[in-house]
Image (cartoon, rainbow, N blue to C red; front, top):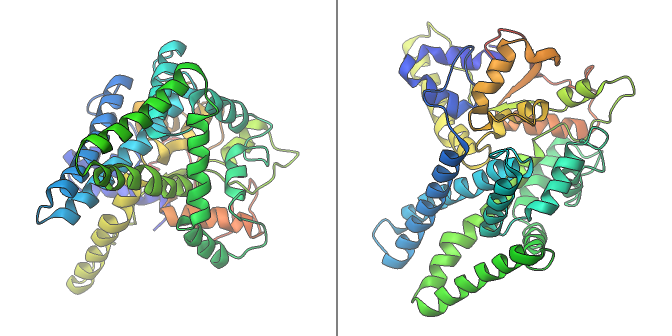
Length: 392
């Protein structure tokens, strides 16, 4: 089965389940519309609620020591991490483009408040790194791109084999140097490089936590396990994996490429699902393959969607084509609508099914594997361009 048949094939399930499959995979069906359109404030509210619920659950589990303490902490971590990454990857990102509400004053205020809460990079410096350098036509995915600089900082180099790069990735995710340098950078941006009310807010945030830990018995454990672990340790891992697979980082721009071709061939959709088992299987094969499919969806694709490819990360390619859109809360549907309308003069979209496949594309480019025209790696699962009216 072709990779790009996956979303279309999920229509085997009842129609009322299709909004769920759109969320889980990150991929909408042709002509599909959201059941209820989202807006910036409802997205912000749901994100903050998820974050707060996760911290509350972890803190309660730590302080109350119920029989299901470990389960409560782990579920709390998942909710807190999802909320934190949605804040950074979606909300601060859109504020950085002044596309949260399209009001620069409001967007700057919201972005600075959220980045203060997360101890993440302040909005003003982020705007320069992201809007000017990462989105710049001459610097996108080049050595001047801050994201590529960040990846290179941890030892990803040309000539390493795919296997070496996978091992290096796992090593990086648990490296004290990786986490220490990432954390130091976050605190430097928040406490020392900012100015005015933004710096005051960052120091006030620290002071509030210190006061709570001094005044409330056991609060240091709640902060450490309920806040620090997901917002620092797991956040770093999630952010690195997302950034690593966001684009084809290591393919230089060809002199003959137009700006649109260069951007389109370095961007892709990263979708979360495995191909469904074929129809007409004998009962023993049917049970075996469907068990495998549900297991993969439950223990691999669902956690990847909820913890790494959060928010609009699966359809990040749509954002690079149309960074000024206000449809970002429902970008899965907006991307498919763009495909349905002929993608407005842009080259075809590219879909990748399975996070590990996206990782392999990036690693193949870095290891020097031969490329197809347009920068696509020569692999057994090369992505198929999405054409007008295609399901995926």
